[in-house]
Image (cartoon, rainbow, N blue to C red; front, side, top):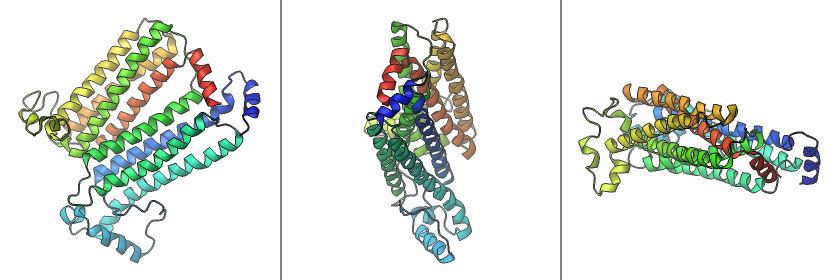
Length: 367
């Protein structure tokens, strides 16, 4: 790898990381592709399309191309619990309607793999990927493959006895996607982000801790939301702010042992998601108010100001989704909004850590 050539090229730019910016844009495009993948996955779940393909076939790219091929795929689906218990009597035409969405979802995952691997080989050949970054990218590529396997592991749970995937596996699949998305976005920002004005070491440390806590809370809320989705717990207590006539339903601790209510009791799972979401919104607004007048400069101040705006939009989407009994469109937007909120908090955190010294350290890692 021609690291000497890259260092010479970088020295000719005002921004020493200019030669690495194409890698940053590539990583940002990959992150966007992962976000599209998440949205497609949400739509397959909401429309019941995710169980239409009962075989994994990770290296198959083409859909059925003949009438016999369609008949074979449909016959396999007819042996599944979803057909027997939910879609009995469905015609081949109706089957194709749910098949295509899941097919596009899986095909998009394979396209992400190609969009990752082929440019990576090119950038390595050009010397644009350094010795520190390369192992991280290889690990991310392997995680992407593991995510595909985890997705099938999730789907397989709905092909055995009942036409519902395990909500635990659904949450794991979502969090794995979030990990890959966050790593891609952070790596892209390492290449593309500009350092905001310095805020002082002590103030920077306080902001770092506060935003890191908010980011952790967002992730916890998304995990709770995945449990709500997997259990269809959004179809009960469709009122706000109270759950029916009370704040906490009486059946919230009916399951035994007690700890399992946090993960399997529909009422408590929904309550937990509401509580965490309220914490995210208050944390986002509180962080912005706390940051006012702290001399953060316009760039960092703008990033912190965006967070409560997105948090408010996401809260409004969540409430609207609940009150309207989880329609597909609103539910899909709510899931996408969660990733957007995660992105804005991550963007703010990256800006806080990107002091001049941090920028120099990041550039060293890029080499």
